Length: 341
Ligand code: FE
Image 1 (cartoon, rainbow, N blue to C red):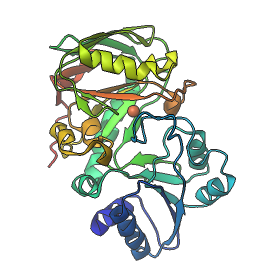
Image 2 (tube, rainbow, N blue to C red):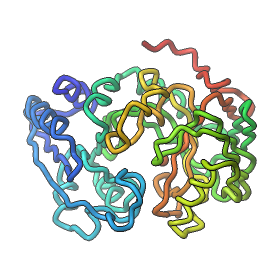
Image 3 (cartoon, helix red, strand yellow):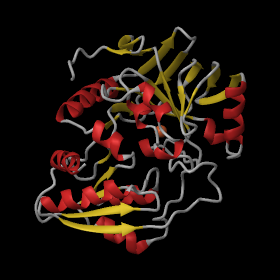
């Protein structure tokens, strides 16, 4: 883990004398934290720990940090925000996602790297410079596209007009001032023009729901009109999803959020079933090569105005993803012709 951190910190361009603040919470893995403290100091950098209290416990329906968004332990916490803004690099071992405070810290030029998966997942999915190259090449294509069209043998036929929001690259390290990234990752994403996505998405058997961390057992069909999932139909899996989402009592929960595809060959579709649900947030599922990852909920991470506390990430297998008529993924295989170990 120390060697893994050293690689991540080297790729993140950490320099001697810089200030690193490690954000921790009740669920921070002690091995990840201990290894980060040693690795940061080996660069001659100054390291601080900022430990914050858990929140939202009475509102969240699961212990997954991504299952209830909105307020964070930084909300209204001026002292903590000041400490993070005065750092060169923040290692977020707590999960500070989708928040105004995170944007404020990034705007100050601070780099933020989220790392909350268990040590075994982090160690297997240590990012490389090649990951960055591949993800950036995909993001460039995505940034030029006006329409993403997704199809599958299961029945997906889904259209996303693009151009309102730029592409976002997640390659696993934070190498530029003001950059946020997540170790592990390896995918490109954007958001459809607000209110314009339409068509049908069919979640097939074996596709994944997050934060449920379940493989779908019978197909779920979503009808998308005007940017929202208007109907979610199928068997018991569809009923479970509808019931979970209904608890948030927020129509914005049903909006199409980010869309993109996985580019990480070391991430696996099959690992999710090997972990206790509370041990992982499911980054293998989000990043495995050739998935089509779409989500329901907010678009404020991409620069939009929609915030909602509900967020569902859904990686699908076996899809064909086309940008302006050119396939970038065909039947779940990435077509970038880049050879990666
Ligand atoms: Fe998401």
